[in-house]
Image (cartoon, rainbow, N blue to C red):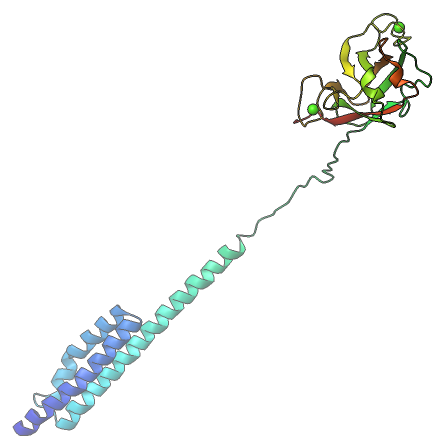
Length: 269
Ligand SMILES: [Ca+2]
Ligand SMILES: [Ca+2]
């Protein structure tokens, strides 16, 4: 009996180590509390069971007891795991109403029809051709006429006037002519240019040295540039004179000039 007992105890210990390892696994996966409870059950023998078992249990009894205790511990751990899973489910289910209640009413306001249209720069003159002409000019003659400059665009503009003159022969009449430009008459502007006493804007060769008569067509505000508000007009007076000193070499000579009014926007420029 003693030898059997001594042989049986190591076997009993091996079974218990297996059970203990199982409990540790259970505890690691679900519940440390379940593992502790299982351990207490494993190591504590109920008094009544101790009395009925007697001092020396048989080898078969020692082998059977750990299995029973192990099975109970596993069953206990399983129940605890079920409890934990149930608690998790309760937590998840409890969170669902919160997620659903996160929906809120929304609305969006909008402003449409935000349209943008660019303005226009539009300059024109009246007349648009043959502003000043003279067909039988003699030394000392003068011809004067007015031109109305109109801003037909929707933007304010500034403009410059340039000239390009050519001789139709080799006599260079253009260099014998003097062009003078003034603003509308100060005296009796209703009959423009007959008094020719407005502000002088230019006086020189018919085509100037660089073609520049009034202002500068280069972009930006330049000295002499004329300004016109949208839909505004102004009248200028052009006068061309043939010098009294013009010699016989210029008889039957012809020249033609083109005056250009070059406008640009005033805004941001
Ligand atoms: Ca006048
Ligand atoms: Ca300019």
